[in-house]
Image (cartoon, rainbow, N blue to C red):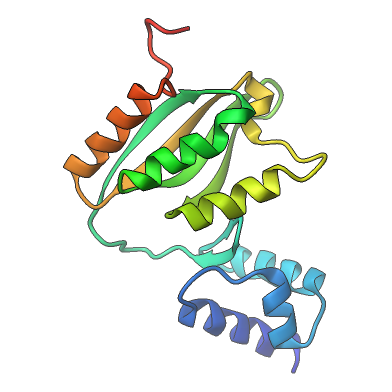
Length: 175
């Protein structure tokens, strides 16, 4: 298969996938290396395909998502409480869409998370616990911003209250 056919196949596989697909899995299905897939994904993005890279693999960003409630929250904690923060959100019915930090040189750095369950949280935390790997919030003394989603506003309010109760939210009265 030539490069154009391979990118068509990657697009099809991502469209039909029920969850994230890793570059390694796509490489196996296309008979090429992982690095070729990374290049193909970059070319597909340049061509307008909205491909997100999550900790578990690539997913397509849908232009018209299902109705949901969303908000941004500012959190602060050390690395020892990362899993607790993620579990708090998903156990109360929410999802962590992304994480953003303010970097002194690069400005705003944002990474997609797409954490919807304890399983997703565990996969993410296991990667973060790899020697030499650090979460983005390590760059900012633990301060970071999350976009949260939930099925409705009541659920989203419960998630935010849970984060506040456990001391994760950075507020004006809490430096």
